[in-house]
Length: 482
Image (cartoon, rainbow, N blue to C red; front, side):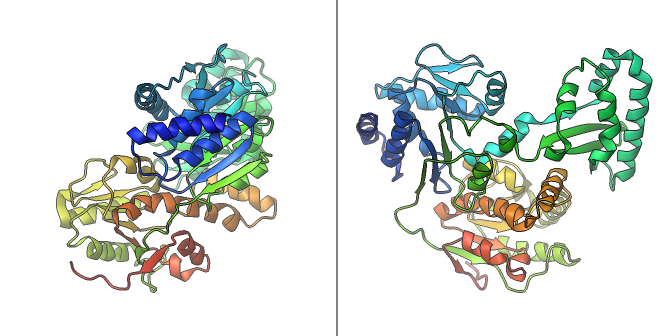
């Protein structure tokens, strides 16, 4: 049986490669069973397990890889081909891999990026008997949204005019009117301006009269305004703008991608991640849902979060951030990471801290000093934390609640409002909570401390959900000198 063979092979491999992760064998048996039975499985790992799932996934695929599709991004594919596959070869395990949009004729494992997965699905290269295996499934919606995104620039307008010279005057007039509207709506230089569907109706009416349409205009015409977000980013220096289109809920729109075939999804974002809801909405009814928790309770995280802190929308918040960050950084011998998504506030804080602590303060860089201070966005930290030493402390300047000024977020919120749903507790809060566990995972390994300087943690009722997502933790009431 495939499970027993995979278990024995991995057990032998781990004798020579002692990796301290308790779920290697369990994950291997789960993957082997799902591959053998063609299950629709969701396997949820503990946050911080991102680097550990490779062996448990790949060993069963060495034994049974036919009709399996492994979805990996470019950096993950490089690791598979340059690190993991040679490692398996040294243990006597072979994993032939096939790359490209055409499915393999033999027994090779078919490797696709998310972009290639979408193309293969559209071109009907994926068959019903293909088994999809998607690590980091908690990122699937975001990656699908990026893969399906449309961006129109000035050269696309020029290409449309050249394809239909009879409509040249109408297209020029329409582009000029849209340009005046978006620059009039801008609240600052190089702003991002959301486009309403009504503003684009004249363009859609004109496109219906023009055939054939060059890419990507054919996709623009097919885009249902109720399922897409539209916005423009402006370049005041050149007086130009780019038009962006992104799907609100890509899993719902890609009919047949997940809901008509077997799939194994591996997530390490924690139980609070909104993945389960997204899969249910997309019609993915899992046969197997497994959560692999740590066998022993982790040490509680020291949490500094004073009760009376100003809210982010108050005038004193920026000064509060500076003063508290200064107190937290003083005397620390290890790395400090400050998480702050607001660009202007982050740049101001970085500049003010650098004026006091010098070159040890940097913004979003992977070469800090031993006692360095990195100010960065949440997304940057989650992407680059493996390239950095474990921090001694993590400072959450602002909780990762998405701003309604972001056009995509605003469009998703309006869609939920039309459905009569609680957009904050159904969208913004779950997505914010899903970022907490992976963000603090390196801190738990280093034994460092966490500080939350956002007054909403104690001042809003939903702050209790944040504290629950951070469990286990112990309160740190005052900062004592080393």
